[in-house]
Amino acid sequence: MKYLPHEYQDYATQFILDHPVSAVLLQMGLGKSVITLTALKKLFEDGVIHRVLVIAPLRVARDTWPAEIQKWDHLKGMTFSVAVGTEAERRAALLQDTMLRIINRENVQWMIKSSGIPFEYDMIVIDELSSFKNHQAKRFKALMQVRHRVRRIVGLTGTPTSNGLMDLFAEYKLLDMGKRLGRFITGYRADFFLPDKVGFDRVYSWKPRLGAEEEIYRRISDITVSMKSADFLKMPECLMTEYPVWMEPSEKDTYDTLKQDLIVLLGPRKTVDAKNAAALCGKLCQMANGAVYADDGETTWIHNHKLDALEDLVEAANGNPVLIAYWYQHDIARIHERLPSVRTLTTSKDITDWNAGKIPVAAIHPASAGHGLNLQAGGHTLIWFGLTWSLELYQQTNARLWRQGQQADTVVIQHIITKGTVDEDIMAALNEKELTQDSLMNAVKAQLEVK
Image (cartoon, rainbow, N blue to C red; front, side, top):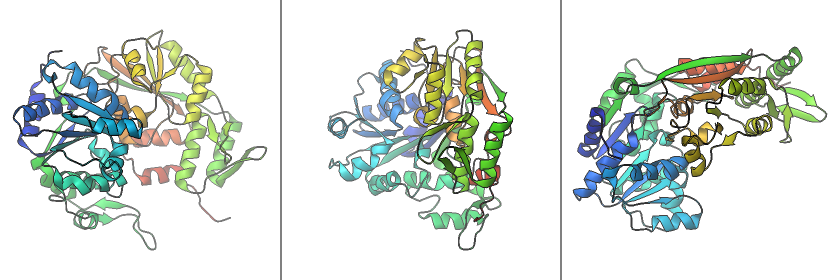
């Protein structure tokens, strides 16, 4: 296919060419992959680089990057290998003499510390820079050990601060080795934050100082380009709706008992013990969806209201393809039991078949399919069966359909909400973009008393 770039795409490509260290913050659907690949092709042709490492989420590494390279005429001749799968398969891919070696982020530590293969790259591309927002994560520490060997690096993401400004420290340290926001998290906190929630011997959360946001953005502005989809693309209308369901009084009593007392007997010898607010929130989310894992690992049924709603929504689609987002494994198990024709998108063939219109009802898990996958050719209706607290995964999953290339005039995103439950709190937090531990804790309001 012939590449006819938009003006903003030319600008972003030139930005990468002009900045050996760059952060390209493009919202979903703006074409981060082809923008970057176009810059890489030019750098290869000019002899500036000879070998590039691309780090991406698993399915993006396996499917999206190879598909983008093979899609565009101007990228012909760009060789690549994909280092996913077994250790032997990854090792073989990394040893191939290709221009790009593409690896999933989970194997970065293995590649650097355990593979025994020399780290010899001119440039690193990090697709979803936000995957490296934790300065204590093994993948971050491993990549920092070799960062100084690389002359050029570009970080791509549409959600750099999904959980707040604190995320930026590790992301930008990986890019510029601490030049702009400091080398240590303690200094970054001291410069830009104040304690917010404080316990007896620790600080539980931090809040930005007055003017911190502006100063942080000023410091990183010289290596950062940021663009919003709505500013550059004619996007289809996105219609967000809620489909409410209600528990029966006995089911709601079970839910409320767990919330208040933290432990409830759901049946003979089956108990659910929520030892802290985070665990409790997870249990409440499960119960809102219709089932819950008991302490023995078995699934205990609570209700079918979301399944009934899902069946109604799929029927109302009148044969138009529907994509379902689920969170827990017992959710998808019950969905498959109710709607056996639902096909979970896990393999490359699944994704190809969905985009070819061969799958009428498909399911995805936001954590495994939320980033980078192009699913817009397969349909324009997304149903959230179970919600996530993660704004990043929520936005990225929605953007699988609501993105450039969507042929429908309207994308419909429906949320099945169990009223009177934590579903309403999660939905409110997503709408207000206040996805912090405080949101979770406040939503649960558990009385964690020693009994």
